[in-house]
Length: 130
Image (cartoon, rainbow, N blue to C red):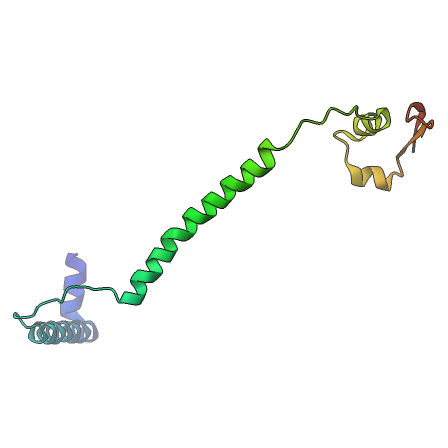
């Protein structure tokens, strides 16, 4: 810090810039001090009437959205009966074959599964081709 103050004292350009900055600072603080009156009051904040009505709507909207969500959950959740149909054997073979495999790679490699069924849906033969 001592080096900086020694330099400012010796260098004409730096001392002029420093003095000018100090004068500007004093001028600004005088202007700010003179513009402030001691006797002033801040009025109470009151929101306009139309904003009060708007706030009520913004409070009601999330409640209505939550209620609609709950209604949809009950409509789709409790009216359903579990599926008791047997999954066809061909569909199970297809799922077992495709499980965890990259479908894009299988497409480019031209890998396919061929499942032959009879009229009743029983699997007669399944062939995997490359």
